[in-house]
Image (cartoon, rainbow over all chains, first blue to last red; front, side, top):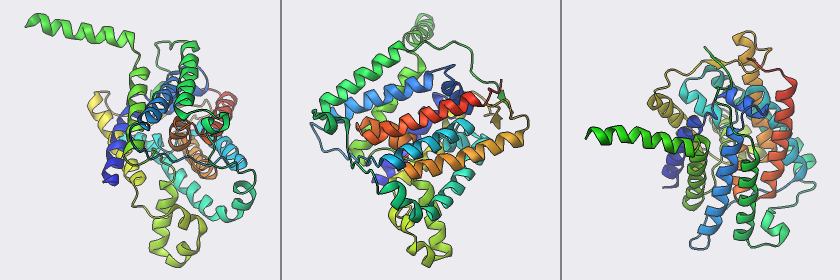
Length: 182
Length: 179
């Protein structure tokens, strides 16, 4: 059943990411160059709705939460490497698959690169684990555990900050950010 | 009859003015992420890439796959996340077909230096290498760490997002735009 849920969530997620133009590298670069903030606002609102929704729902039913550990060197270092790749190619691991479904040829090259990156990492993991995974591992910490807050209260607080930040961002100019070629 | 037909597009237009597209889609994606956590677990994409490598290795060189610590750590492909990635492909196809936008561009020139298609494809490829290597180093990507992670209030997601947007914005600034 979980496999079917995964497939359905993926289809809907693919449609939403395509509709918001997150699978367009031109749109991603416009956001990273701060010329258009619609994807940043979309992500912030997704998180705000998700945090309040998930923790509110957890009061009524069991939830499959899965908190990732904060091993500072790997998480921050990985984020920096990811950011360079995101700025260079304009794709993330999910949006390149959506883009490939749309028929974007550069998305196929991003997926191919991802496969190569996965091969390199698979063989580098043994050497990297003691240097980047083991030291400074703070465990599965959350905003609620660090601030000693009830998770629902922390979720509402985070959502308020994110929605406040969205409200302060300038509205989009109408023009499409990057010219399609191809 | 004619009146109702005429009234509908006006109402839709007014709604579109009040709620921008990113806001409607953001609320829907937030609800979808809650649904995933309620049904099976938080959404995530990037682990599927090394799982695919593991599956190929297990078929070609079972001994090497079994002795690789990362392949044994990520496990097999029979996971909801794998199905999610298949769903993304279908969703992208459906959304493009049903939207009436027409054919997707083969590529978009996002940097000034992308003067030839080959250069654009090389950047997309190199970007792909770095996002998966970085995501695996961090233990998640835009979906697993940023969307699902921060949704669950994880500090790791916030730290990863700071790295991604810091390096991403700097890279985008240093490389001139492609318009």
